[in-house]
Each structure stands twice: as structure tokens, then as C-alpha cells.
Length: 292
Image 1 (cartoon, helix red, strand yellow):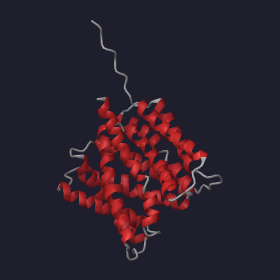
Image 2 (image 1 turned 90 degrees about the vertical axis):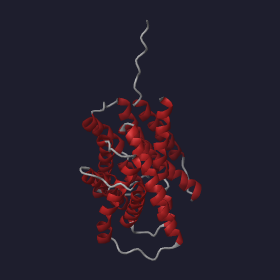
Image 3 (image 1 turned 90 degrees about the horizontal axis):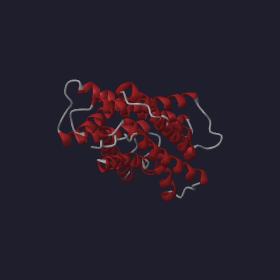
Image 4 (image 1 turned 45 degrees about the horizontal axis):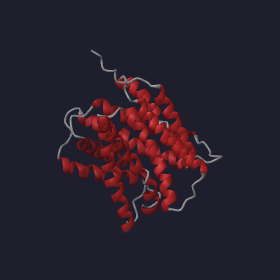
């Protein structure tokens, strides 16, 4: 049982670890200045492809639920993420978004009746501190609208995480992922068309970047994410998101030659400690076997 749980955690953790490559792929392979269009092209083709694979559409109540979850986990979340990223320095935006696991702990209590454990709160606070050490720069400016967008995005993803577990869809994680990606991508189409110009002619590098973000960064990783949510507590899954900025920093150092400071190394240690604490908080004490 413990081996299965550890495998589920490791497999789920692969999703945010891969998401950490999004910044590198976006800056190196994609045209700049089209965040909403990139988000739409990341979600919609992947969702439609998965729908072709599973050949199963939502039924009844799952139509509105799929679009609501698609908005919470993709459309609204990504839109707020980009607003935050444009109006705040990257470090501030990442640190504001890192509050999500703490929101998940509270929502899990309200929606699922899960207990609030002190160790979970400490792990969430440690994760925020670790992310701040990783990406926050001295003298970073706080823009109120940017901070509000970052908080709104964190709340959106937190609600999506908890509700994905609460509603427990009667389908496989692959089908559930297809529904949400397709719905989220469809919701982003009018937003991208309204607020952004058309894409320039795409190069082979652009096409490689879009293929990676859609197939690997969306379809594959969110399949792992929703699979984890079907097997683990949301307060176990959400802190794994702290691994994304760690991977982003490591890729910037290894692939782009960016400098890594001692403060960032300390941040990596703190992030790993917070993830470990969050998993320890969910371990249920088993009663000792009764003696004859």
C-alpha cells in the first residue's frame, strides 16, 4: 500500500516538474507577445486529440462541470497568470501564485471535510518562502492589479484542484483530462481572438514548441495530474506544484547558462523540505494491532 502511494506521488510530481520547462520552451521556441493565443493552442488541440482517442463526450451534469473545471484549471487560471506575469516581476508573480497550496488546504476542509493539519500549513508557508528565495529579487515592485490577478489565479486553480477530487468523475483520468482541456481551450478561443493579433507565420521551431506544450506540457502532464487527484488528497497534490519553479531555475542554469546564487540553492532545499512536509502531514497513523 505504501509503495503504491509513493508511486502515485512520484508520478503526479512529474507533472509540475515538466511544467517547469514551460518558461524555457516559451522564450526559446515560441513567438513573443501572444500569451492567450499560446494558452489556447496549448489546451485546445491537445484536448481535441484526446477526445479522438477516448471517443467519449460528457453526459448530463458533466457538460457544465467540464466547462467549469476547464475554466478554473485552464482558461481563467492561465489568463490571470499572464496578467500577473505582465504586471509584476516574475519573482513576485511566482511568489503570489505559491499561496495556492494553502488555499487548497482550506478549501479541502470546507468542500471535502478534510482536517487542517498544522504540518500542512507549515509546509505551505515553507513552500512560499522557498519559491521567494528562488525567484524574488530585491526591490521588486508590487502592482495591485498584478497581485490581485495572481491571487485570483491561485484561487481558481485551488478550486479546480479540490472540485476535481470532490466530484470524482465516472470516467478514466484520460477522458476527464480530455473534457477539461477541450473545454478550457474552447473558452480561450474568443478571448485570444478579441485581445490579441493574429500569429505571424510559424517557423519549424515555433511548431516544435507548440507540439511540446500541447502534447507533453498539457495532454500528458494533466493526465498525470488528474490521475493523482483521483488517488491522493488535494492537499497532498497541490504542494507538488512547488517543483515547477525549481525545475525552471535548474533548466535556466543548465540550458541557458544563467547564474545560480547561494540564496537560490537555499530556496531549492526549502522547497524540497516543504514538499516532504506536506506528504508527511497526510500520513495517517495506523492503530497498533490488538494483542491476544
